[in-house]
Structures are given as C-alpha cells and as structure tokens.
Length: 235
Image (cartoon, rainbow, N blue to C red; front, top):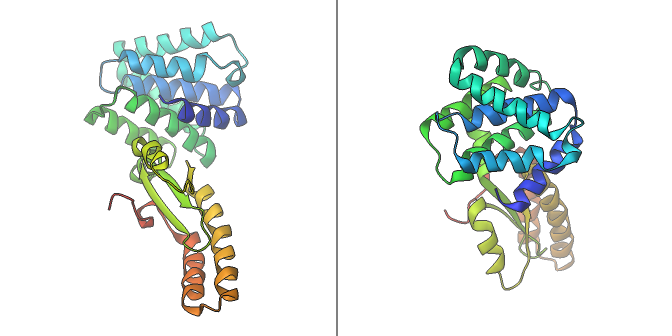
C-alpha cells in the first residue's frame, strides 16, 4: 500500500472513529484478506499498517485489535458460512452512511490489490461487501482504481482520469506542473468548477465567445458527470 493512499484512508478513518466503525473495518479487512482462501503476507502487512500502527484510529489496545482480526481469520477458515454471517452484520450497520461505506470499500480495495494480483474470488468478495453497504461495485471499483486530474490553466481547463499506478509518472513528466490530483471525483469536480468560472471570465474579457460558451457548457455538464463520463488519458 503506497503511503499517500494510506494517509488518505487514515484521514477518512479518523473522521469516523467509533467502536462500531472499527469493528466493521476489522470485518472488512478479514473478509478481503481471506477472499481467495489464502491470506498473503502483503495483505496482513497492509492491514497492520492501516489499523494497528495508527493509535488515532482506535480507542482500544492494538493487541486487542490484532487478536480480533486473527480470530476472524481463524473462524473464516473453520466455518466460513457462519463467520461471514456474523461479519456481514457488523459491516451492514455502516450502510446508512455513504461516506463511511466508501471508506470501508477503500480499505477492502487496498488490501485486495496489495499483492498486485486481483483474483476472481477477491472480486466476488469485493462485490458482496459492496452489496452489504448498498454500493454499486463497478462504480466503486472504478473510482478506487483511478485518480482524477485537473489541469490548472484557465485557458485550457481539463478534467481527466488515469490509473492510480500511472499518476506519479504523469505528474512527474508534466513540464508545466499544472496537474492537480484528487482521490475523489467530487473534489475534482469542485476544483474544475472554479477553474471553469475563471475561464469563462477570461474568455469574456478576451471577447472569445466560442471558447466562453464551451466553458459554460462544461460547467453546466459537470455536476452530472460519472466516472465513466470522465475521459481517460489512456483512451
């Protein structure tokens, strides 16, 4: 798990710090790690980094958290059906809060991709957990697998997406250094909207009605855009 992604997730978790949320987090971690029947060392390392090494995420002793996680993993191996039922109840409690639910799915995603291989069993588990949280799996996965980039130039504002693994290279290779990177589409939209407004004012002063109208159209379309509507730098 890359440090920027881990830091972003920790910030989300600190906002929702509660015993129920921590319990749901451990349940998601256990189910995600055991999804393919084999708990990889990279997955356990990711969980350790996420939950155990940040005291701000929990009000109970880290050893107790670790013990609970190991118990869940052991119980999943012994009686998966019954244990899944128990853990699913802990996760489903978070379904009414979309932001909490999305934070849990970010944890699931980072654990699943931590060994750089996504197996069919892991994808099936990801979709199942999304269902418990009333989230649409394809949309959630697409958002987590991409980052959103805004080109901060009022003369040529762009909102695009790119695979998370490619973002660092894209930014580093940009001579102008005008890419601003966002984890969340809503945050990228907010930044793009402000730049579109600046662009409208700019083209109005330049008496360039064609470009002014184009920026107005993009601004009007912005709220309704979904992940699939955002052009990819790799299309």
